[in-house]
Image (cartoon, rainbow, N blue to C red; front, side, top):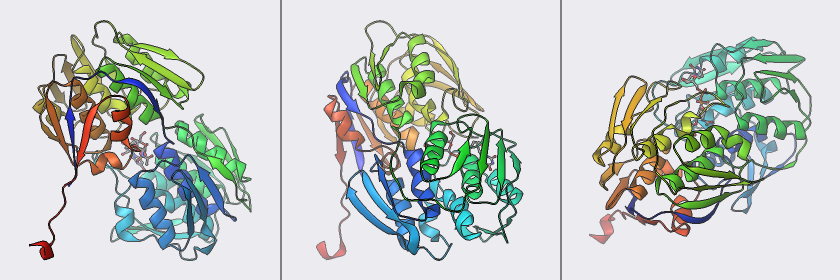
Length: 425
Ligand code: EPU
C-alpha cells in the first residue's frame, strides 16, 4: 500500500489550478448512457473514481476514447444490456447513477448496491421511491437493485430527505419519460445544476435545477455534445483550508467563487484573509487564528465534504470550536487519527468539540476520501513527519494532490510499497 510522507511546518505559497468536479463528473459520465450520440467531456478529473466509472461503461459495451488526460469521448450506443458488473459497482458511490440512466434508457436495470466512502448507513430508499413514482417496479435481490417498467411516466416526486444522489437519479429516470415530472425538496448542489446544463445542452427539458423544485419534461432524443465539467468546489475548498492551516498565501485558480461562499465566510470568521476574483480566490494568513463553530448543511450551506478538512484546521485555531455534521451518521471516524497528532477533539454523536493547539507529526491512516485530505492538511501544518496510510482513498477524488502541493512548496512524497513477487524470492 502506498503512503504519503509529509514533513510539516512549511507555509504553502504560489498558485494551484483546480480540476473538474468529481461529483459532477461521476453523474455526467453516467449520463452519457442516455445520449443517442457520442459525447466529448472536457475538464474530467483524472481520479480513480472516474476510471472505475469509465471501466463500468466499457464493460457494458461503450466506446471510450481518451483524447487527453482530461478529455474523453464516450459512445454508449453499443451498450445493449442494462446490467452493471458487480465488483466495479461495489467500489464507488457514483455507480448508483447507472440505476437511473439504465432505467431511463432501457426501462430496466440490474445494478449492485453502490459502495463509496464508509460514512455510516447510506440507504437508497429515496432513489427507489422516485423510480416507483415514475412507474418502475423495484426490488433488491442478493445485493443487487433490479427495476423494470412497462413505461416511465412523469409524476410528482416529493423527497422525504435532501438527497443529492436521489435527485440525480430521479432526473435520469425522468429525462426521457412521457410527460412532466416535478421533483420537490430536491437537492441544490452545484453538480446538480451542472448535470442539468449538460442534459439540456443535449436537448433535455429541465427547469429549476439549483432550486428545490425541478421540473423535467421528457424528450425522445438526446444529441451528442462537447461539454466542460465545472471546477471542483470541494477540491478548491480543500486548498483554501490547506493554505490557511499552513499560514500560507495561495491563489486558487479555475474556481467559481459563488460555490465557495460558505467556506470563504467560515474562514473569514477565523481571521483568514480571502480575496475573491472572477475565477480565482486568494487565501492568506498574517494574524492569529480564532475559533468558530459550524454546522454542515445541504448547499448553499457548509458542505459535509469539507467538514473533516475544516475540523483539522480548527485544531490550530485559538479557543474551542464546535462542529456539527449530521448529514451522514458517522463522519468523524478520522478524529482518532488526528488525536494521534495531538489534536484535542472530543466527539459526542454528530458533534465534535475542538480545542485549538499544536499538531505533531505521527503515523496515521486515511479512513475515507475527505478524512485523507484532512490528514494531509494536518500533516502539512504539524511539526515533524506524518506518514499517511491508505492513500488510495485520497486518489479516488483528488487529481495529482501530492504534485499540486509540491508546486506550492509542501514537502510531501509518495512512498511506493512494491509487493515482492514470488519469483523474486
Ligand atoms: N439518504 C437516505 N435515503 C436515500 C438517499 C440518501 O436516507 O435514498 C440519506 C443519506 O444516508 C445521507 C443523506 O441522505 O444521510 C444525504 O445523502 P445524499 O444522497 O445527499 O448523498 P450521496 O448522493 O450518497 C453525494 C456525494 C457525497 C456527498 C453527499 C452530500 C457523490 C458521488 N457523492 O453522496 O460526496 O457527501 O452527496 O453532499 O456525489 C465525497 O465526495 O467525499 C462524498 C462523500
